[in-house]
Image 1 (cartoon, rainbow, N blue to C red):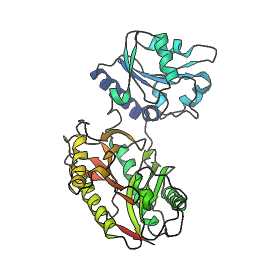
Image 2 (image 1 turned 120 degrees about the vertical axis):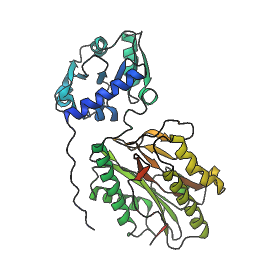
Image 3 (image 1 turned 90 degrees about the horizontal axis):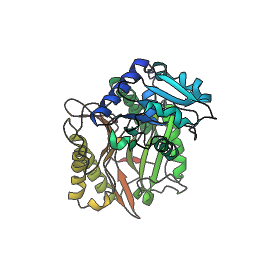
Image 4 (image 1 turned 120 degrees about the horizontal axis):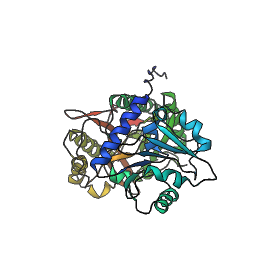
Length: 378
């Protein structure tokens, strides 16, 4: 097993982060928001490159608003770490000491009657503190207010997602060579985690190994079950590489599959193909779900497809947009998301196939390119 050298992409610059901040302010204004409040989590990493070493009860918040310099409010003891982040170098930093009220420090940065989008990851403690200090303000989650804030990727982000997808593909190419029969799911999951790291991932987020009846649970965590000959095994794995996510699923069979496994796998393969084929600018998120779901429903397994068809991916492995009925957000070039239909037969087995897809000017391109056929493993 060898790992091809992957060129490390150049780091994001101060200008990159400030351009993102300007886009967020413009989008917020279009939605009638007074600004955006960003607390520790993926939104803050994407806008500044800063991730506190520990998310504590102390208030940290980035305030973005029109006609106002981007300002990061941080505890005094964390100011040196914050100022070391690339994106923060182009922003104003205001700190507060433990003996002071952080909400009084943040209050002058907000309009007393403003309506703000706030990170989904904000602590209730902090939101209530802001409301108490500025009772005339109102807030809504960024998933509700600006769901597409991080959805459209630039070329530098797409390069990272492409590299992460290729590394996950390489891991799959190796995992099908290991022995499954007679080993615990946790052992195969450990193999997968090691392969993701071997091929360049700095973080492994999940390694789902669902064998036999466990595969009928879409979010089954690898357990102590011994994998048996004849089992269908759902392999869903991913993590972060260069700060951006991978997420792919293939279903394999230990030895010769039953006809039922072959038939269900082929239905899911066709459904996944239909979902990817529906990707194009102007199509809605729900169109992707409908295209994939129709294949499974027409085959008689509609009740066994129990989750949405896909989710966005970027600095986290799950983020907006979501490919689900009722989501009418149009697709635009640069969006990246999974297409992952599945069929889950309780007490028997499950099958899922997943690729990350990016929207182009004319359609969609897969970032995962391993064989979609039913691979047979030992």
